[in-house]
Amino acid sequence: MTARDLDALALERRVEALLAPFGTPGSPGCTIGVVRDGALVLHRSAGLANIEHGVPINATTTFRIASVTKQFTCAAALLLAEDGALSPEDDVAALIPEFPDLGARITLDHLMRNTSGIRDMLELLRFGGLDLAMPCSEAGLLAAICRQRSLNFAPGSRFLYSNAAFFLLGLAVERAAGVPLGAFLEKRIFAPLGMTRTRLTPRTTEVVPGLATGYLPAAGGYARAAHGFALGGEGGLVSCVEDLALWARNYETGRVGGPALVAALQHRMPFTNGALNLYARGLEAGEHRGVATIGHGGLWPGYKTAFLRAPAERIAVIVITNHGGADPGAIALQALDAALAGTPRLAPEPPLPPRHALEAMAGRWIAEDDTASFDLALRPDGVPEVRSHGMPFALAPLADGALTARRGVFCFTLRQVADGLEVEEDAERRRLYRRAPDSAELPGDLSGRYACAELDVEWEIDAAHQVTVRGPHAVAGPWRLEAIAPERFRLHIPGALADTWAELRRRPDGSIEANGARARGLIFARRG
Picture 1 (cartoon, helix red, strand yellow):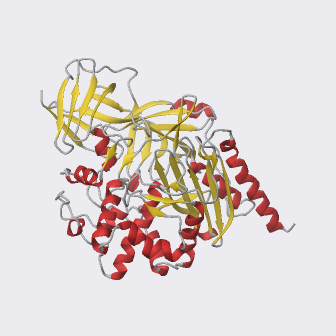
Picture 2 (tube, one colour):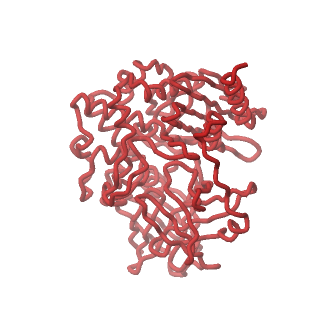
Picture 3 (cartoon, rainbow, N blue to C red):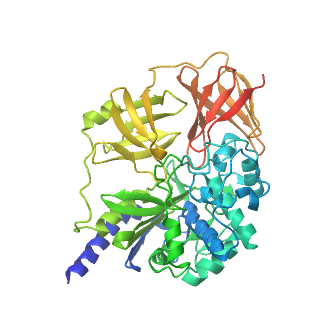
């Protein structure tokens, strides 16, 4: 065997080892593809596409790839810009007249870069009791967005992930093109590239050939993942490894859109304060062990995807799973390590701080300047894990001793300082966190009704501090309130995808300010 043959064999065995946990009988599965120099050099799968019928994942199995859709929606908008049908600098309201005046000019480019400040529609509906497992139409999603009268921040000043932004972008593409988004993508991208198993599926009830069933871990095994929201430019694609490999090659060949489209998708812009945004257009730039990367993840109940490229190395890794408990992002990085093994381009991974130092950081931390808080703990394997708004993410070491989030599109780099923990967020902004008090109590006069006009939602807090939610789509609860500091609380919100929490603060006028991970500054006025 030649050295290249041996390298290929080593990569194959490493990928098979990554897939081994999915080979347990009765387990959902995972599929991994490695693209090198524009060719799919390795494609392996393990586990079941459908547990009930014992159907294994194979080369033709398709999956919901969720937010990996976003780069395709951006590509569609950029192709229309080349056609002269729109411009990235167009005001959103010019193409979507029903979009409200939020006191600032918001462009299509703000949508593509997650700098619009528009609150995330999924979180808006969650605050109103509507979980992803429940049905919600495109009209319902648009209505939730259009009820807003304020923003998370001034457009262009910050980064915050927003599914609403890409939902609107998909709608703008449809109106500029005069055809449904799926039809435009098929004609201009999928058909020319030979992506025959990729399609937009606006309705989750649609029958899709070869589609794997999504599963979530449950007591004693797995449960089918329920999801009922309409899907569009933010996450509606179904695809597979082979088709995404064809798309990865397009970043090198420019067959669709030419070099201009490839460059435009990967182009990064600074915030208004001059700091460079890590998010390009439907893609997130990063670095792994000294290697520049760009890509995106996808998450939908029962489905997870990682689409990761190392452009200078001409390597792409694609990981898709129908196992809701898997971590395809971590798998993709390990597969990238294997693909680059033995090369000087891959720097050594910095070690974690000593365990005693990590244990000293464990606990609950709260920011002094707003409602933000997080919990930090060590996993059984010794890796530090943060839980923010209920969502867990592992921390990885940096060369300077800091710890940074492994979770995609989430800006969180933690450093110890004399007064507590400092967290660097988007736009290079830093926030100081101090330890939460050892104990806190919910105030006795908190019970009552609170209404938010921007959500058309009422929260009723009873004497036992349980919250009943009445919104335009659902009645939900009871939800649990937890005190974390004087006049500061967490509202725990159960969901099909995950149990999350909103950060609440009671204001001097008796109203409650609610902040989620992607929807901030919502005011619930007291009604009685």
